[in-house]
Amino acid sequence: MKQQLEAILANAKKELSAAANARDLDAARVKFLGKKGELTALLKGMRDLSPEERPAIGQLVNDVRAAVEQALEEQREKLSARALEARLKAETLDVTMPGTGAAMGHQHPLELVLDEIKEIFIGLGFSVADGPEVELDYYNFEALNIPKDHPARDTQDTFYISDNVVLRTQTSGMQVRTMEKKKPPIRIIAPGRVYRSDASDATHSPLFHQIEGLVVDQGIAMSDLKGILELFAKRLYGDDTVVRFRPHHFPFTEPSAEMDIQCYRCHGEGCRLCKGEGWIEILGCGMVHPHVLEMCGIDPEKYSGYAFGVGLERTVMGRFKIDDIRLFYENDIRFLEQF
Image (cartoon, rainbow, N blue to C red; front, side):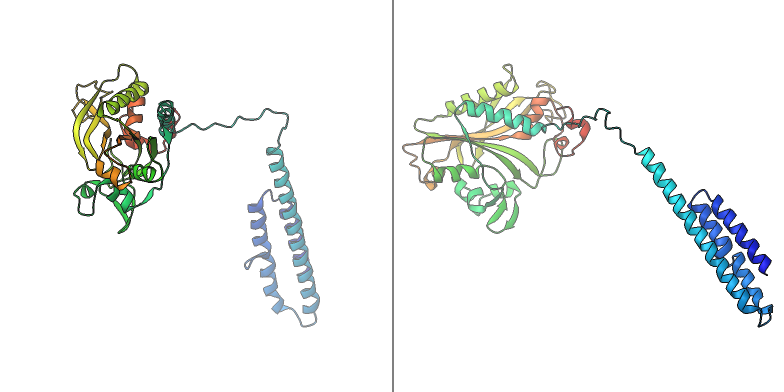
């Protein structure tokens, strides 16, 4: 048995030192120290020894086990050091090599065109106003001549937070907030996000952006509104841009109109984008309703004004000839890198 133990120790040291990786090392451990290993099998033969022989052989078995475990740990440390050395060699950093340039991001197309629109209107004497997206029902509806029982509330498909708080359906509430704080002359635009419960398709989204415009002063007429919106369209889309005004109805303007631009995809012939009409609506407009002026403390006998609301997404679609509004929100790098 003593000779067998010496042979097991010699074989164990040989196989452990030859182990090239953690898998080979674990296989050698199981072979010699496992529950069915050679050393464990030899221990079962101790019952055949005499009582006088058992202590000496037992001590020898313990010495052999300790020697095998030490050899196992030494080889494990060698393999670990070898792996670390290989990894450090593979990860060597040459500080003299030129660095890789970081990829620069791009402005989102909505921001690009919004900046252009701001520049156009600021150049025309407008200032930029901002307001809350979570709006009081009063500013979103009632102060704009849309009382609780008005049918226009149904067409807005509003997201209600409570009975008196909504996600704003339009930036028109900034008309009222501005007129409450500032007396004429007033000339502002108010860009921002708005929310409506619309089904998503090529030209509709439940979240979109609107740019409200408001002018209040003495002697303001519908011709002023028409002239400035035609100028805006031509500066944004080009001098050959064709626009048209259609009579419409908004509770907070009277008279009211919608302005369309000729479809930039089919040039008026009719296609999927313009739903066969040849025109795309980009904004609603009109003269500020006298009752709205009164509610804001402005005398409608002395002052008049006009307001308009531009849909930013549809404006950008026309600017870059994009035919699906959903592209703005999908964050597809292939799309965004074009800008």
